[in-house]
Image (cartoon, rainbow, N blue to C red; front, side, top):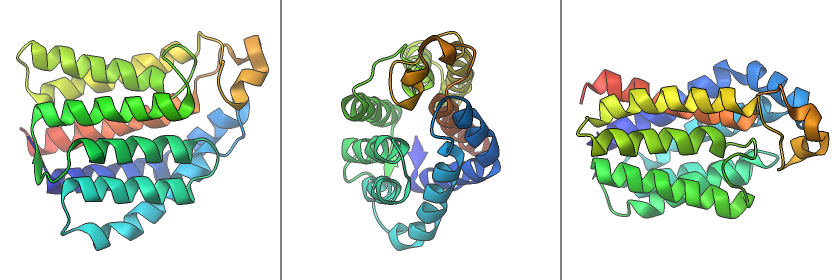
Length: 212
């Protein structure tokens, strides 16, 4: 079960990670993309943190929707629409909720993936954000199906996300600016998959802290 306080905590921790890893994400993007992923994500989540106080008393779906809309309007490049859509779709999946069951969380994650796939016209294996996101969500579903707690599931999700990031080094980019490099994109890890892995790291830290 995730409370509204935990959702807000997740957003704050993730924002801190985007600020902390801004240079790393930008360096990764300079190798195969526009060179601004870290700068954009850091700026977008700074705007999100400024927006949060206006939605403290709202339902979880309103909070997630506000995060998504802020990211769409403040994050440049492809990341804004993709991350923004992910948060908005996740919000729409849990309409009216004050707290989220494991099933709610899984549905929110799945809707977020669907939103990214639709907006980015991408599938797993194309060296994108989805290459860490989909394995992480599959790990959550497998863990919950095996009777584990969401806290345990998120530990496995983070590990799967970083495995996915590692996997992006071995494949050719076929989407976005990186696709122009063709085979030269091999050997480079995808910045979007990396920033997404930090989202699962943030979620894992929140769950561990809550101990539920």
